[in-house]
Image 1 (tube, rainbow, N blue to C red):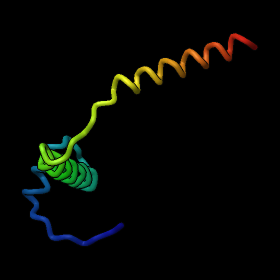
Image 2 (image 1 turned 180 degrees about the vertical axis):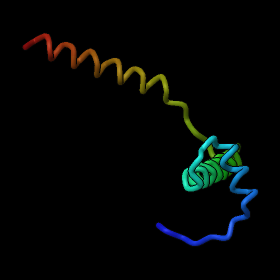
Image 3 (image 1 turned 120 degrees about the vertical axis):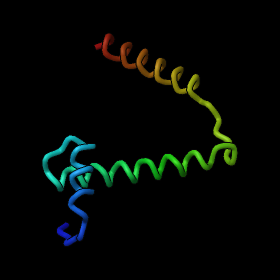
Length: 78
């Protein structure tokens, strides 16, 4: 999407330097993506202690191991 924006030159130069990008578009896109990512992280951290999440890592590992064993058995039977 094209947009006309009035962004101070010194700010664009700083963003380019921080991102290591020569292209203004790429530098601004990276900066915007990082801003959104940081915002989402803050929102998730704000939920700490407000929701309860059950750790099912062990059960998922067991299911994955069983699935791998089943696939192995199936392929060996051919």
